Length: 191
Image 1 (cartoon, one colour):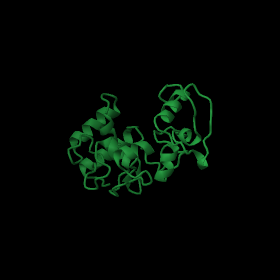
Image 2 (cartoon, rainbow, N blue to C red):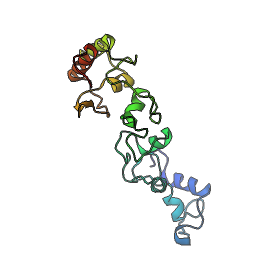
Image 3 (cartoon, rainbow, N blue to C red):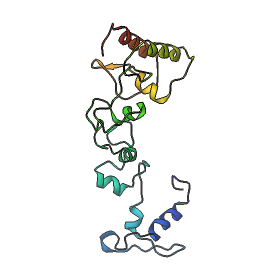
């Protein structure tokens, strides 16, 4: 079965019947019996997606990405998602603004616009870390509320790595995040 649930031979047959390269590998057609005619090796190989990231292996080779890794640059976005967003699948921070592409996407920001990025710890996305962020963080840690994906991405500041929050959210919101947000909001720490 293919990832879409269709029988593989039907998927392959559909791709091949809709215009697969008839010259095939090294100019030789590989003939195989099928319900509708012939299959060729080139056409069949052009639809293989070894890492199941949504890009065929031949597309990945053309992009320079690794067809065995769903996320070549290990930034949290699959190679296919990178193509969709227009980000560089070989660079964790396409716009060089200090935030990994996936973190910007999760926080609701454009990963290819270096002038648009979240404020670490700004859970409510007001532009600064303040008492509202402290209250939301406290309620989340106490289990009184759940943070949205975007709030989690902006508020997930722990651990600090080299004095700044890690730009790849771990989807865990803990007391450590609350303490850093509180410190930033009160001015007792800077990150």
